Image (tube, rainbow, N blue to C red; front, top):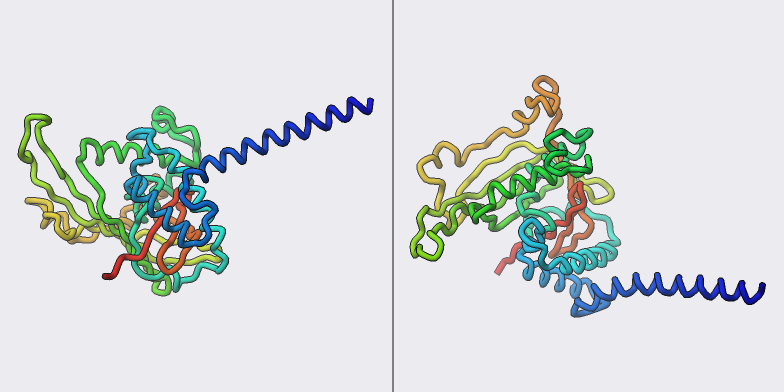
Length: 307
């Protein structure tokens, strides 16, 4: 009996050691790919974050809709973000958030950092059930219905290099309750006949899409809540304006909030819900800010360089 108990205890200890070593191996596998581990400072962690951001084209090479490439870098980035977030001991303040920021990494499509798309995500994911079209397109989680919308949107606007996203920026003023987001887009960057072409078939044009939100509130856990108001397209530096119709569609504000409240699926047309959204800041210092949207996607920003 005593020998049996010893054997059982030994087997239990062995099983525990094997399961623990598996977890350690997984973590060490990620850590082995990082040049400095454990990171000895926040600066070392941020340096590796920026290295992965550059290697993955601000995270856009991690999009499995394009190809399941570099997915180990997603794990590396997740670990680095967690390590840096653990160093956020002080509360997130308005002073730390205020000012201009540029997006350097996103786990999802770059345009989804805009309050316009954040409000769409919140509205879709908070609505009950899954509509028939959503189920037909493969949606199985009511809280992630927006992923189907963004997948379809990306296929429509990014296919064949039709549209590319350049600089993405945000300007925050918590005291005044203002939040401005912008992204530059270029349309028809390169259009040639494959193999035969040596000149562009279509002119390149584009603009800067600016979206404004107000009623910005900073909560104790670092969450910024806001209400989407309006959007417009203006000239992006170095990018030709939309030909022929630029005077009609550009440089004018579109009242997104007013139209949003009229839509029947938002409770309109008389007492429609306002387009609201939120992002939570999990880390911020003088140079870097890391936020998560309502679905948990990571967005990493840095202060613009002033040379």
